[in-house]
Image 1 (cartoon, one colour):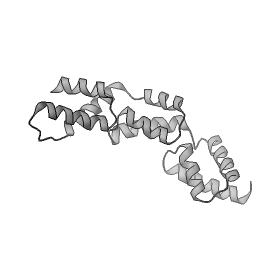
Image 2 (cartoon, helix red, strand yellow):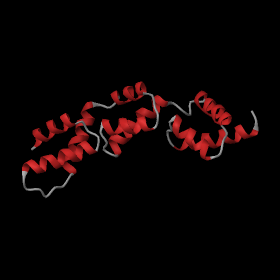
Image 3 (cartoon, rainbow, N blue to C red):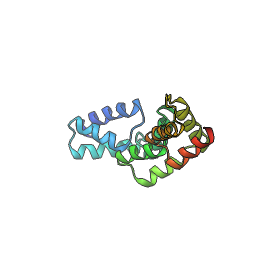
Image 4 (cartoon, rainbow, N blue to C red):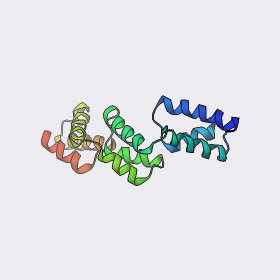
Length: 150
């Protein structure tokens, strides 16, 4: 392999070692390092062979991490993954990996963590729902949980 490709490959390996990366993130990083398209293609190909880049693994890791750490719902996770140009089928499979019990537990935690000084119960419920929906939880589920707990 030419030295330029080896140099970029080594930098990309270190970049991927730090945390799980998707194909688009690695391409963007290689472009920011001023790699030419031919080098980018060869580096990406080699990284995929060496299992540094695996979109399925990335989606599972991303979805579970955003749910547990950022308290995001499926809708927000879906939009974030789409913005990274990940194929729809891989996204759907990854979102199915989210355990429904964990998902509902996270939604309940999001709702209970929101402190509101609203006296009117209808406005309070509306604000809680708006907050949870903004975090990416599906409106029917949000309203179901709010009505069960209030």
